[in-house]
View 1 (cartoon, rainbow, N blue to C red):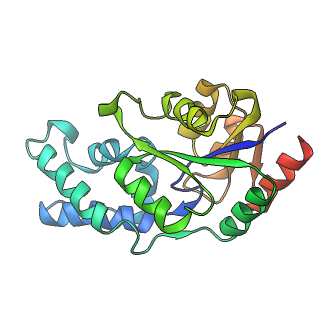
View 2 (view 1 turned 180 degrees about the horizontal axis):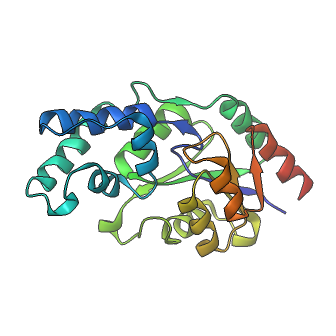
Length: 219
């Protein structure tokens, strides 16, 4: 019986890709680097902001200007993280339905923790009380390590066997596996359906409302 849902953020609850791409391209323009398409940025996300920048900058961390570029990205994105970002169609209705059923909810993301908190406050604070972003400096390893999921379960007062994990990528699948949670992957996110099917999660959903059906069938 599931009474807790742990959500990924980018590509699952929020379509953030255009704001992420704009931030990447802001840095690339400032440092005279060829800009990336939105599709290329989409392929590069999933392992945290630093990894996104490593994949977006020539020579990655070996670039002598990398740290300055990374700081530039963080500063720009923190100020522009919800210009074009929006909840996917049906997400708000899903959260209302889960809340009415007494389901506890949390967000775990590899996005920088301040941005996760800000986005949760803007969009989901009436439904989601726990929102955890990247905080390796605080001793919480980023996904696919289970640390953020474990921390979320602790804050929610939920048991592992009561929880389900919902994401949109191979990183989310690995996170669920490492956390000992069943995984549901959504097809509207940042990865192709073919990849999602190859992972063989508990379920792949095409509409947010399908999650309610899964939880209902397991109660």
